[in-house]
Length: 348
Image 1: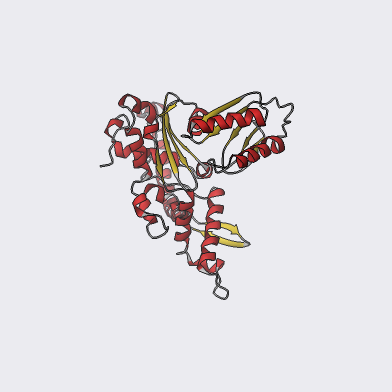
Image 2: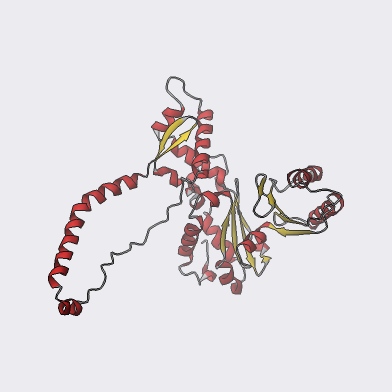
């Protein structure tokens, strides 16, 4: 049985594990004991007297040895477990990804933790933290949706307008519904155009078979069809560029455009949050990709290639918003010119 400290309590029936408990750092050990007692004996229905289930606990990195001792004492003496194991959460996440070396980027609600790991050991002096998280991205997108008058008028009708604070809360709830339902993606910068493959024509075989006329007529029909459908394709491309969706929210049908895909922009350009939050602007200097590059640069030279090869992005946002890993990998790669030249990482 494994217990991972997450943001909510939910049972993984397929594996018999329970994800429970947030925040991780709690000074009051009595509250921690009561929380875990509820998990073990209520949710998992273990019996204290005949508890035959070993427990594996993943915790936040950097806790003191005293905390480890108190955890062991709690589970052995109070919960009567036959076996107990502890692993720091980034290590458990990277091991679950079938790797022992890499850099774990854990995107939380209010902060992002960057943890380089080499051969199963955390490189502690290279750990970094970014004071920006999922909630800030939600606030940013809610601020963008204020420019959509259709949404604002639907949520706050002119005949019964909402106060600004309540409207902001409703927009934040709409943003949460959008990303949890998978309607938001992270667009990558640029793209690869795949050329049309018309195949290779074996002229000799055609001449021998006497099918020159059939091949010429087939090519002319294909060109005519392409000209006829050009207008239809252009029209379909225009509709696709609008990227409109209609969602049901609080009994209303709201149409949201492609501005919803800008939700994660503050992670890669924190300056966008200027004037939106009350955070100190000096804290939000470096974007996420620069912090990841800096964390890898702080490791030993002979470790960097192995660490860079195991980039892992975790957090609630990665379950519903796809493409975070690809964009982060691409933007960090542009900082280093070559993935193998991690020794050249610099924030200057």
